[in-house]
Length: 295
Length: 163
Image (cartoon, rainbow over all chains, first blue to last red; front, side, top):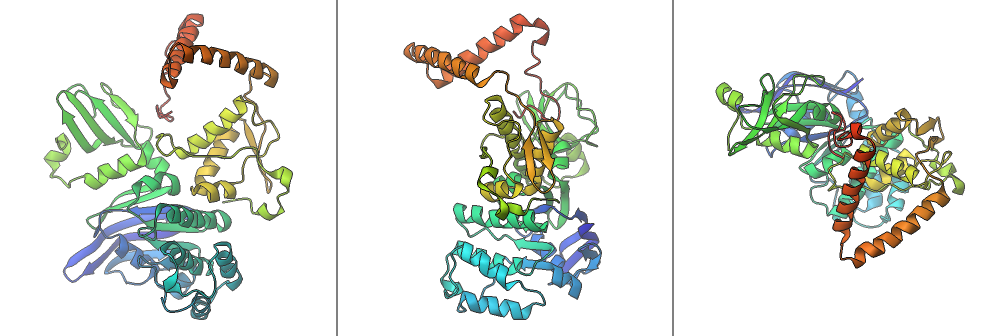
């Protein structure tokens, strides 16, 4: 079952396309990292998935074929937006009460148990909690709805490293307990290897990379050698750096079982290295794409 | 995803003797670090057949890592016949990598300590000791078994020289 499936999806604001030609089929059970530069279209995609905006073109279904934004989709998806939407003047208990009344399904005892475990008192005002506690409160309200898909838009950006670790541990434990799927936009590439097992990379409103991280790592190699002896024809060059007679080239293989190029050394790459190469990639004219961008 | 939920029923003897840790700067993929730590513990006799590996949920909560990564590590250990999953109970050690008995290991460790004291007295620091041991070990294996030269240094494509 695909937790998110899109085909030719696009969203236009005025005359500019925030997202275009987006085609994805993300299976359930993963933690999907959505990465890309600011303004690349990450939040647009997440807002479309949760039904906060409607597509300009294309199709989008969630939870195995349910149209995004439909009542069934809203019931099965929980969303924590970038700015931790809490009513700052309300107490924690009032936030629970409000969220319970605004949702068809809300597990109050789960929420109370989680908050007690975290040492967050019922009586505190949401606005007086620390950044880490506010994030945990927002996450608790989301998880108590027992979603099948949890959508997180840069939830850990304002948190210190310890609070971030605890927040991610909570998300991943929920995944282990209930088998929920998670999609998370983040700039923290160093954390990806640990927390994510599926990657979607968006740049300039287009999907540049998507798949399980294992599969993506199997598809890419870093070649080192002399430019004239390295037979990398047939591989797409993602990034190329030449210094003197030495060349480093990150390439995408045509398939995971394709032979490795002869005449140069090749080694696997890490997910952070791979992501950075794609983020740096300059959309180049065809000629430059063949010869690589020398720096 | 089938993940153990019976944490609350865990009795004291159910606690795994092993606790995982991660080295984020090592460059070794997370699942492989978990596999290697189990193998290491087996080699040193710290884990025995019948011991339970930490439950997926415990590892996830401790290290903030993806549950699928832990499942992948445990699958790999099962494929190597070092562990096996029992539905609803967890994953248990069933193989052994210990090449010597615990008393033999203790004796070896003792003589190694004596050697290390000598090495330190001769002015070697930790890096110097590691370098000397590594090169002597390579020399030793090469001489005993000339065909195997380089076989240690050639990584398979999958594991890819990350170790």
